[in-house]
Amino acid sequence: MYDFSFFRNNLDAVAERLAARGFALDVDAFRALDAGRRTALTESESLQARRKSESQQIGKLKASGADTEELQAKVRAMGDRVAELEKKAAELDEQFRELLAGIPNLPHESVPSGRSSEDNIVVRGGEPLAALPFPAKAHWDLGPELGILDFDRAAKVTGARFAVYVGLGARLERALINFMLDVHTREHGYTEVLPPFMINSASLYGTGQLPKFAADLFKIEATDYWLAPTAEVPVTNLFRDETLEAENLPVSLCAYTPCFRSEAGSYGRDVRGIIRQHQFQKVELVKFTRPEQSFDELEKLTGDAEDILKRLGLPFRTVVLCTGDMGFSSAKTYDIEVWLPSQGEFKEISSCSNFEAFQARRAGIRCRTGKKTEPLHTLNGSGLAVGRTWVALVENYQQADGTVVIPEALRPYLNAERITARGKLG
Image 1 (cartoon, rainbow, N blue to C red):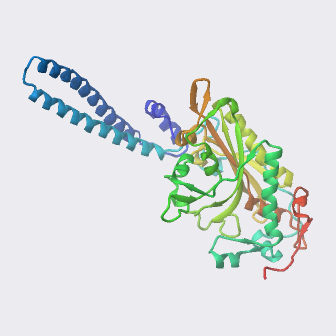
Image 2 (cartoon, rainbow, N blue to C red):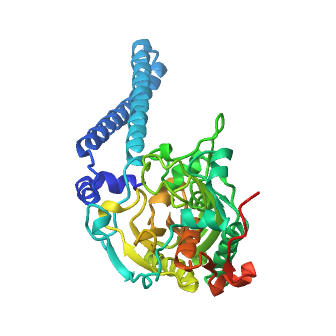
Image 3 (tube, rainbow, N blue to C red):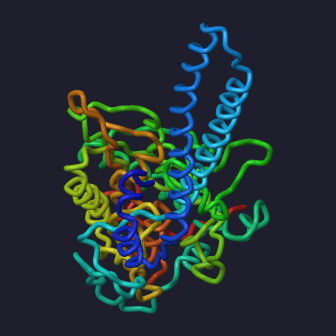
């Protein structure tokens, strides 16, 4: 969400910057709305001044015994017209606000220009592990063979794009969650929270998922509750409509949650396995910062997410997204991508974004320095997507005999060094 005054006074500049990310702003429509609102307010203010003056005149005439009935009727008509104009201005203001809610954030000046993911720039890493000395199996084959992943029973219980983790497969998922939370809270300075997994519409509006992305979400019938698409939503909204003291910033929070997405429009992309599921687990990192510190904190947050991959010994690269590939609310985003040998490519495992004041304005989150208050900046990133980390481990650490070596960082959580076939569920 934009500051109204800034948006109205910089329409052409805003339109030019939005064009860099492929968004065409209808400047004429906004100007027409704004002109109509201003005209209504100007006429209303003029009528109110006349109404006040003529009301005073009525008082004088009454004191002299003159007939004021006609003048009183005129003043009443002015009052009715003022009410109409104020209602019209409020309606135009609401139309302006609704249109504004559908406009993406402005990309930061440091974001490279581009039209698609092909124009993203690698800033770190990018070297895959040496090719496996045997044909790499995909996790959707290896998991069922080891008896740690069951797609058929998940489809029976729920439907397509769900999975059941079994035995060491389930324990590996849980170990990754605990490992990530332990590293982020003990070494990276985050405070762990466990938020609700259902959120209301106001929360989704605050972080920018509503109204634009309703089709990507799961709504609970006959309620104002939705299943959380990411912990970013409930954690960011913990401070909705609050003012934080600037001296206490940054506030750094992390949370594990299951995430639920309809994946509307993604049919045919990553439909096999657990890369793109309707339900998946994630550990999320969220920061609330002063405006002047937010880009330094973005670098730290991204480094915190990368550190998990380093400790697990997984090859990755970090790219800065170009203007045409950024998310709706983001001012700047780094994607961290992990190497998947079965696909011979890097796959996104975390997006780390600075939203500047975009979400804070929508959610009413401010910071106070002395007597001054202003919207603070919000940031978030996956630290990491647990299912995709599971996939990367199973594929990168697979052995010629069909087993999977467990990286040293996770062995204390699993009390095991290797995943071997132990028979399927049942």
